[in-house]
Length: 382
Image (cartoon, rainbow, N blue to C red; front, side, top):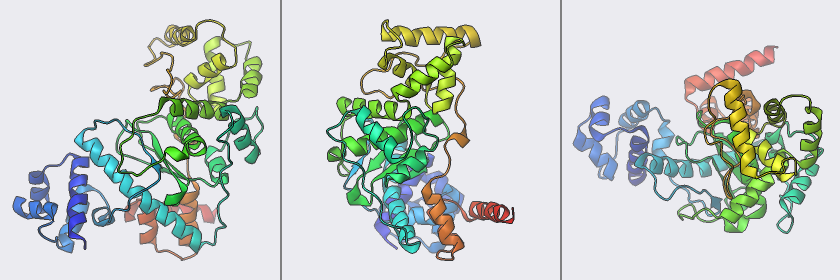
């Protein structure tokens, strides 16, 4: 057991949960001095103490025992000033991502999965041209919605993880090939909209395609580059809602009110209403000042539904084309499982891994894993 890392991991989890030394020590039945010695690495906790700590903090034992692996090719931009809890959450996700990537690689090896295709070289192309190439690889016509963005990303050889970051101000990150990528990790926090999560996948894919040279060590803090953010946003916008698709749908719904027209397209293409408004301006369907369109939509929405939209202003350069609150929001089933979950199930059913290992790989406790396993058995009986 690594004394140094147990203490650091425990301290991080206590910050994550907002727990004090006194609260934790009292709850698991040890003295404050004993807990302080564990936190500073002066003493090695007994296995029973580790089990109690993990149970009290509602984390896996492995979370307290994990040895850090440094990422060398990652894009993870956060605010420079973070609260202690947010800082702990960021540190934790940067510990968990390389473990997940290692598990992914192990599963592919166990199951004899072929090597992944390379991402297309689009660095010298426009966002529109790059999106067309990606759609062509996935055999999706320009006017069709991306019904399975998860599958598209997998087809491009990108690993995808939907994982709760335990913080709400960061939506995702991406990892380069040197760290067993390319990979996209999306914050699956329940308070973040499905629209935001879908857009984040497309946005981070844009960074992998255009900005891989700006990826760096996980220990470095880097400011957002507005030009790169704008390019990733533009790519995500045309990937999810190309001009030909907007033209087709805008004509199809021309007999219904403006707000319903926007919301209908939003649902067909699984985007935010802001992405639709942005596309209307981008493709010349709105001739006035762009800001007027956002204000007009918000006013019509308020007149129809009786309450305001938050942050209904026009997105500026570098800002995501997603609203903090979307009218007629998408639901959980609009963005579900990834290839990784399927690999874990295959490995377990082929008896390559135990149910305990499967639970660890899926970040589930054993009780939750048994429930999931029961659902698999029910499915098989069908």
